[in-house]
Length: 253
Image (cartoon, rainbow, N blue to C red; front, top):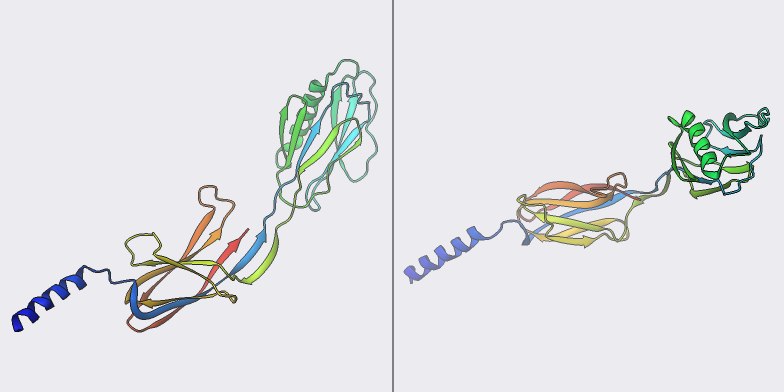
């Protein structure tokens, strides 16, 4: 009898030593809460200006470009080199002159002249890209912008991306949010996940003694390689112990 008991003890000890210590099967738990913000991110305004064939642009014709907030705003006006006239009177705007020849300038050559004139002030204000007679103008600063206007001209001026300021849409706890747990510290692959309650709380139950990592994902649109960033909290759990890891702060866009 003693012999069999001794053999059974050896087998049991071997099995226990080969099993993973962390994981389910215990009497401990890890709880916490998920909080953060839902953000509508800012973006830059993009305007497309098209010089149509047979443009019929006249001297002193103009279109208007704007920048966010109280920054500089511009009037881009045309000077016909065949019949030179002075600039139009537009107050509270920086005048940018575009030289062209009404008698001989094609729609593409007018577009090139616009591109050249805008590049002279583009440095920290606009990014200019031209494709034949189409000019794409992007504000280098994010934020709300008064839309560009074709003013007095035969140009086609369209806002294709509306600039906007960053706005916080929600602050507080996140209900029904995924929360992940990793047993041990040997890898980064999650072993289980649960959803938060209506009040943002969560709880992993029936855990054994050991090391655990709990995480939730935060969104980061500025990172193309990792748009979802895990926010980790690592903790040690004893036997029959309740661990509160506090708050995991995330952002959602």
